[in-house]
Amino acid sequence: MTALQPVAARRRLREMATWSRAMHLFGEFRVEQSDPDRFYSAMAQDSVRQMQCLLDLTGAHVLDVGGGPGYWAQEFAAAGARYTPLDADAGELALHGRVPLPGTVLGDGQALPFRDDAFDLVYSSNVGEHVRQPWRMGDEMVRVCKPGGVVFYSYTLWYGPWGGHETAPWHYLNGDYAARRYTRRMGHPPKNRYGVSLFPVSLAAGVRWAQARGDAEVIDVIPRYLPAGAYWVRRIPVLREIVTWNVALILRKR
Image 1 (cartoon, helix red, strand yellow):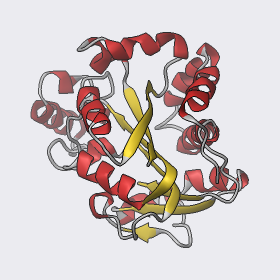
Image 2 (tube, helix red, strand yellow):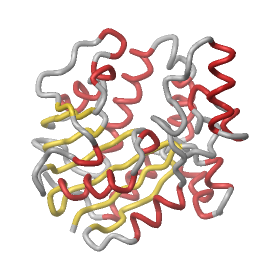
Image 3 (cartoon, helix red, strand yellow):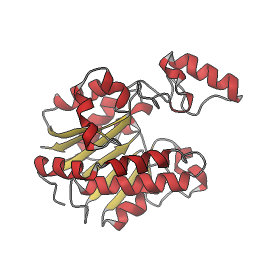
């Protein structure tokens, strides 16, 4: 496994982040509920291409924190990686009628059941907003990453348009109110329950966490789905919390 130098990695990430890619991904989000296989397969393909901007996946041992029902496994395997998925929710592992992958680990991202320095790439997509201690989870991701390896930590921002998940946009008023409104209208509680399985997480907090680490250097902090031409928004407080939507913190362990 060879991780690219930060300058080269940042250049490749920007080359990938085109307007056409952004439009394609936003189009896929429209079918997340109606055609989850199509949606998650598209996200997995895009994610692996993004990881290939950061390191050579051939022979790399990848930990996917929050791997769910295994949509990412095929794409990582096709890229030559050894893939280990972990999820804290047994129900997520069988989501959409899929069979859990052999070797799947049931465990908590905030206390990863792995030794130090075990993986070349530690990856997590849209899990940080679902745990009570997102930076404890980040600490654990760095801990189990090998020196020279890459940590890719992506999560949905609370003040973005999808921050409340299925309760959006009413989360802008209050998370509890949004959950009660959803329950009243739909006849059942939301899957992502505010204060239980959904928590407010900001871009600013993620940047502080990443920059404070002495055991890892920040390769980049990017709006995950936006084109590179819109990356300027990450430098503007308040606005970035709304427009960025989903942020990726990318680190290389020292």
